[in-house]
Length: 432
Image (tube, rainbow, N blue to C red; front, side, top):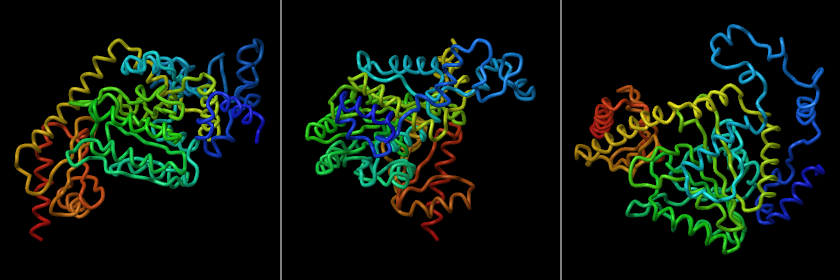
């Protein structure tokens, strides 16, 4: 093992041995080079006042070399904020601004100890970092039966974790905290579990209420008190899009500082929150009472970033930073939120009209981009295929009976026609 990795591990063991035990083999072995090209370049940038011949970019006239055909389109930004490599952890100001945003939007974080957010190449990259750091072959990865399919690729195929699922909803259509609790306590022999919490949920668009949220936190705490080390990941991809009757904060704040055997990890980003999907700007944040633990986890995260993408894209970080600082930002974001809420409310009104009750039910939804139909009479895949061939309507089939509808990308005035066509598609299949 590299001596730098050993030093980090010793520091982590002293700070919180339970977190050390949560690490995968890769997590224990990874480190961020202190004496490599990046550290030498950083030293030169600070002290080499005559010539700095360390940077792996080209300069001209004292600024990063660039092409006019590109800069002419991006002239609102200085070349220094576009062309050089961004630091592996991301632009420092962006990290600070995002941390302040988290505190503003999550009052439960006030007074809690958590790291400065580290910039990732959007949400999937953040989840991949979590998998690399904490998931070994055979480790239990717990999430509900209605989930984002990429979890299986990220934690299962890549890291050979064992997926443990539980029904998302109870019979009265509330979040199944008891199912989560049982799945966690069943890992007592292993002594470790990774829990993925995704609210608003993809694919159902459901976010628990306050009472359900408290039950989730209680279940995780009970597992920790039973001697299970729990890495709890709040996948907050759709954070902020809360339309009615739900939590409006991430559970990350309620989990921070809860128990030494609980490591909360927040994965979020500008991707969906600020409607910049193609910018690929996300963040990963750790919570711990011990500053040494946070320092070590940041160094190991930077080691993963250095070994995979080296650093995230600089232009999109600059774009997001300037947007977050703009006086018009909040008003413009609220305008888009209102559009999204209007679409969600319209969908609910359409579904509650009584027109379609003979062929489907729908799962509760109160947030996010999506909702799910539970089909009664035809298979989801048969309907999906028929809709796209016969009517040019695209939907997502999930299992035998669930059909996911992304109302986020359908104008409100067309939503009723969309569901009428889905209904017609079912009639076609039933008569065939």
